[in-house]
Image (cartoon, rainbow, N blue to C red; front, side):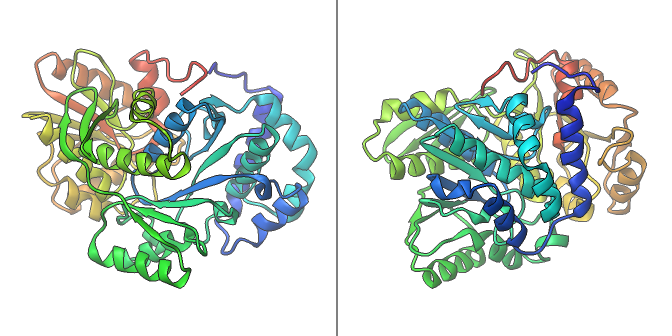
Length: 425
């Protein structure tokens, strides 16, 4: 997707949408419901699959839509945040929403958005649902933005809810303990609507079971994949005595793929294994232990919480990475102390970096926070210098990974000349 002039109409409209972030995250769904009502209640006419979780929900959503497309369905996909362009958040059969549709929607409903005092995510969610209904999708795969119970997406009445791996993140909003966070995530469970879950810690599973019982919602358990085999470009696994692979790296992606397969079989029980594998093969999901070069071991991962860091560690261990250098960036709202514990002993050299005038934590503040936890690290002056450093070390056989945030994707993709979005995922 080409970069726009800062003076185009769509940029002005997006600037207005982004400005709604100042309203913060509201408690309750009243504003979303009111905005939907004034926009014609588009959610009432949609078949949806709703996904919550701390880690893996975006990857799972991407795999579900890829497989369903293989079965000839027209599939909407709503995810967040984006890597490069706002339009990425809202897609149909992989194609991002057009600038023209956003302009038309805002022209019709901007005054309503302002009257309701909707937040950025509330307005974006209603835009997505309106688009999917207008374009007559067969099914829309909807990822929660934050939490679940009070998330703006929780206005839909899905045919299936999915809960991916739950871990500590956004404690300032969702609660300090794993149980607190699980309660928020399990809030997407609806009355008599099946809920699909992967393996969780016992305390998290207890929360999910209790919520499901309260709603008379049957639980579908996704079996853990077996015989997981990982290389530098894909992950193979066995599920129900059938062999699959997905072009994403890590044992956690096999678990996500298992969820996706179960979800698809619920929606299209007649779907064949060959069709499922074809869909998995066509899955694209950038920024998830993503190889940046074909022949050198340099990766990019948006992992930004302890669970995400642990998946990085597991993937590196599986790839037998002997020497690994890391460059970390984090948003201002992250719990550095817990992340530092997850990072202990992971890297031979760890650097911290930032981007000026962004939502990323200043590199000096991040450096000081890690040092306070006795974690050895150094400051990298810029993302570009970090990329050069990792490239030079990779030429000597060392592994490198840039991780911690979606906000550095554009700098990374520009440096490595990656054509991120040529129109479809």
